[in-house]
Each structure stands twice: as C-alpha cells, then as structure tokens.
Image (cartoon, rainbow over all chains, first blue to last red; front, top):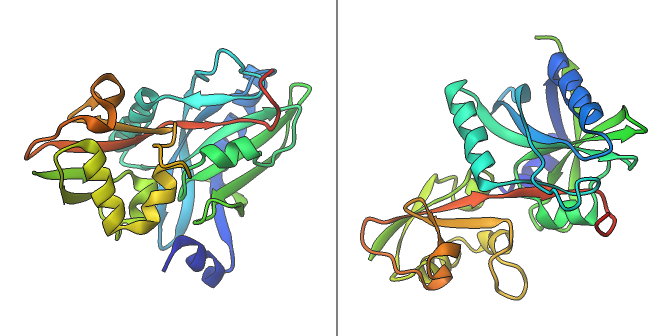
Length: 154
Length: 97
C-alpha cells in the first residue's frame, strides 16, 4: 500500500513529540529570528506510531536569503544520520521556522520536500514562537498531508 | 556492470521497502534509468518534469559527488555503489528577501 493509502486507512498522520524537544524547537526558532532555523528530528517510527525523541539543530546554509529560505547540505544530512545511528534512533524528519509567516508549508517547501519525512514548521512572530504544525508530503507531490502533533512527557 | 544503488529512507516505500537495489548499468544515468524502470514511483521524486535530476537530489559514486565527476555520464564499474543523498530545503513563500 502506498504511504498515502495507508494514511487514509489509518485515519490520519500523528506525530508524538517529547515536550522538551518541542520547547527546544521553539527556542531555536526564537534564537535565529528573523532568520529561519532548521534541524533534524530523531526518533522512532513503527507500529506504535512515530515519535520525536531528540533533535540535531543545524546551521541554515542559505546565507543569501536566510529570512525566508533554509537549506541542509548533504554533509549536514550525513551528520544527522550519523548522530541518529550513534543514538540508536532514526532520522524521521526535519524542522524549520517561518519568521513572521504562518506555520504552513509554502510552494517552495512543497517543491523541495521528500516523502516519508515529518516536516515540523514553527511560526515565529516578532521573535515569539507561536503555531507549530507538522506535515508529510503526499505520494504524488501535489500537496501535503497534515500530521497532528501530540506532545508527550518522556 | 552490476552496481548497487543505495535508497535513502524517504524513498524506500517506493522501492519495495529495500535499502538498496542492484541494477545493470555502465553510467550513473543508465543506473538511475534502470532504477526508475524497476520502480516507477521513484521517478517523480528524483526527476523534475523536464527529465533533469531535482536540485535537492545528490548522487554519489563511492562517496564522490557526480557534480564533480561527469554528472550522469559518470562511468560505473562492477561493485560500485551509487548513493542518493538528500539535500533538505524549504522556506516561506516569497521571492528571496
């Protein structure tokens, strides 16, 4: 079954995020404001669902337009993968911020996204982290499926 | 030549859940064509509508980025490993500011 068909069968995507990680994503977005922050989500994905248990904050490599663009290079990608292996976790997605912009994926986000990953977006309004959402790219790349975030204690 | 193509996690659902796929090819371009011929759903995630590799798809032959070799014409020999490594990009929807 394709991932999108599985989604329809299961009633929607859900992502558990440990409270501490949720706060750390917010803090990263506030720290880099008015530039976009970015980082890797590490965790587990299995029969019990998907859960973010750790992060790898990364440097935004888009020095030319950091207020509305982010990029994680293949080298940083490999670093995130290596960190996941060392911690016996999986690399399950990515987070980034939208400074003074809604926490919704843009056309640019969609054109550059990979399927399967969870994409967490935090809207940072005037330096304050606000709405935080998560998304998965649809199989046909035409749209995103929303992923409901549930914050959990460790 | 039999070469192994490593499939990154986000694409494994479209490659029969495999971590790698073996194909017969003489160049990187031939290997990726053989890969997408076997697993058609991979094509749109690797290539844009004009048939070019998407800019955020990085391809390595034994740890060398093909951009610094002969791109899709890079020759491969038996036992080589081709890796598909994502760049991750995005951002809010305005032209660059």
